[in-house]
Length: 142
Image 1 (cartoon, one colour):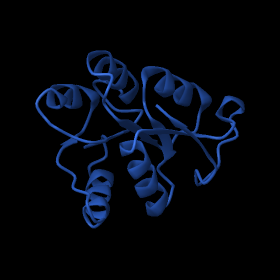
Image 2 (cartoon, rainbow, N blue to C red; image 1 turned 30 degrees about the vertical axis):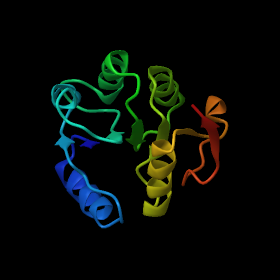
Image 3 (cartoon, rainbow, N blue to C red; image 1 turned 90 degrees about the vertical axis):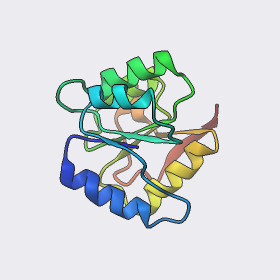
Image 4 (cartoon, one colour; image 1 turned 60 degrees about the vertical axis):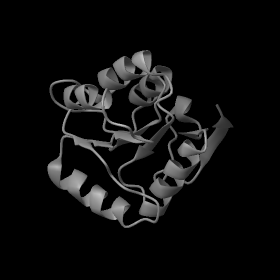
């Protein structure tokens, strides 16, 4: 599932991911409220969640969704590499935080690893030293 307020970005990401073997985008939402309404009845393996969206932000939607279902696998996909967002998403239970500027292979690898039960966060995010392409990642089993 892709949750992002930019339709063109969602469509491009959907097209790219649907061309990956074993991947299928089964749902889309343009804001956190739509996501919260859909997630109750939509079976998904992974959610790609933007941070800043209208109506309900990705931060708030992640917090609410994870309180209701802590087994969701949410990957934050954002253009913001701000420490505050990274810390909040991690504390709310997001399994990864990857920048929108990352290449397709990095995103696909992150998705596979999150599905396998791993958590990925950029090295030294506490000091805001985020790798531009997220190549250096800390991995941990949940």
